Image (cartoon, rainbow, N blue to C red; front, top):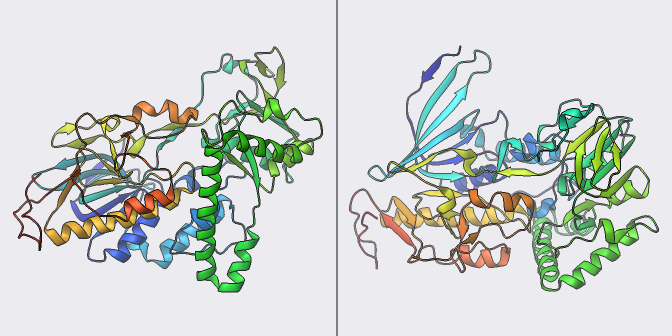
Length: 511
């Protein structure tokens, strides 16, 4: 039995929830640009990094180049543009140290409830911490004028795993990548990876190389995925850094990669048949002669209806070409004692089965959100400029791109957030809430056909048909929208006390 201790209430102007790549970036921007605001970063885990600290499966890496996935204010110094998780965590720790964020960072602080009071113009956060040495649980209360939720959009405590018939009959080991066991020995063993997304494309080459390599890895997919080989090292970036120096070389590389990626995605979506043909030709070049490309690498959807997977230096294709890995396109009928029986009747033998079957979505770690005594259903809210939610006062969220580097959008959101706070301070406001026009048509906030996106539709906010309620997935479009005028007719501002009229403006009133 552990004792529970109640701590004194703390007050902050801004609280960031989450210390992953979004939260650490936001903390840096806010501490630099809003130095007069008190700030805290609350992280439920015992270390920073978010995704890059949670996932421990072999080969975990970024899908995006670090010149765009990294921060605009901190050059990426490593040679590898597509980087493994340890390098990304090192980069984040450097960011914390270089910007003195240790003073605002609270590890082991899980926010379990958030309540807004219009009368007080503040959020009350219920935060749980535990002492690993004594087991004592503490409940802290923190007041915040603003909450910036950098919690990501999936569940940290569980991944998605379908119910497979006969699962209990399998005599080997079943592992989900989100809960990879420390020290799992797969050397010399037969492994079946169920799935064809980014995690599977990463696992296959990682488990077939090195001293502890598996005997053979089979990627079992129900539906093919688009896979493209990209260089792990950006030689142009290295040349630009050598020519222009670290800061300028990084800035030019970032600009180059942003627009290259934008052009590629737009081109594939505008001319899907040409894009499909191009990806097929590249796959044929890298796969063994006579390989059935049309069966295993010809998805029934267009490029970027689901995310295109990246194989750095073609490592995934090399594993297949070298005979260390294979691809099977079929459905699972059931698990057996020795492996997996397919719908075709074939049985895949396995010592280890990895269910790389995706994520479960959940915003804000599933905490209850209460506004003036009424619990908010996030699924009913509309996204304003991709970061504020209708009916939610003083609450911003960091949701990045699904068709580009996640961090690009987060940096734009931080810039808008800073401008919005300054706008409110200059006019004596302490509250802002987006209000959607009545009868606004709604559609899913994620413009993807991926399984995790479709499963999570009922849990996520919605988007409208046009700006500012439409969720843009284009950096150039967002750069215009989030750098434009701060306020419009969709925002309702208020203050606890009547404020003096701002020059050229009207007296603030309670929304």
